[in-house]
Image 1 (cartoon, one colour):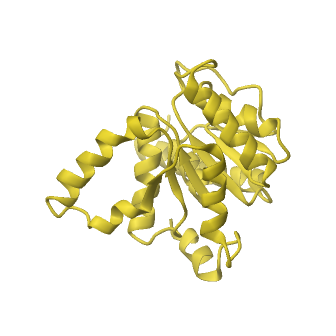
Image 2: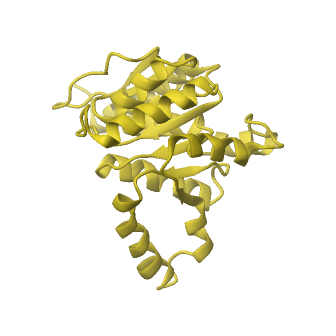
Image 3: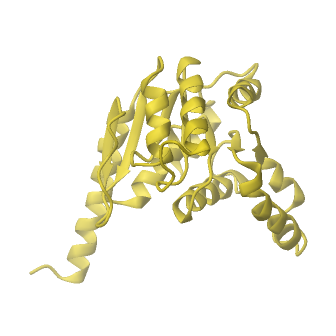
Length: 226
């Protein structure tokens, strides 16, 4: 029987192995955009159709599209990208009460550990597109904001889709976080709300105009210290 220390050691080794396997699997996918959103929003909903359209435009523009690999808006992202010119990538998490990955993945990887999965979303993304979603979507958004704000990751476009959905959160951030000095006002500039799929693609290209999508040497060194 393993001791608790032994179990922890094996868990750390499992995380390391997952990092190595996922990194090898995703080599060569840049430039890529990570697209997040609820697993509970199904086909036929306006958000599903918009996510699919965004992913298709990104794919045709040369971006691999990375989603969480599951149903709902993750499926919409993979479906749109799969129909386009660039790879649809699904980073699925194995959960007790969730089904497996969707059927629209050109590249898929199943994670046991949220930690390793979250790092892959950030490590390979040239931009984040965040659709309406629940705790998981908010977790990914706050993770990226924290890494960029603290300088642990390079600055990338973080685009929120669905202004009515995000309005309350953004107002709360401005009133409570900025208002009480918990973040700086310019930290809110790390995000932008864009509704139209074509405008989202244009905004990402505009951000990288004149510098290219590949991380600089300094940015690569940052990513090694996530």
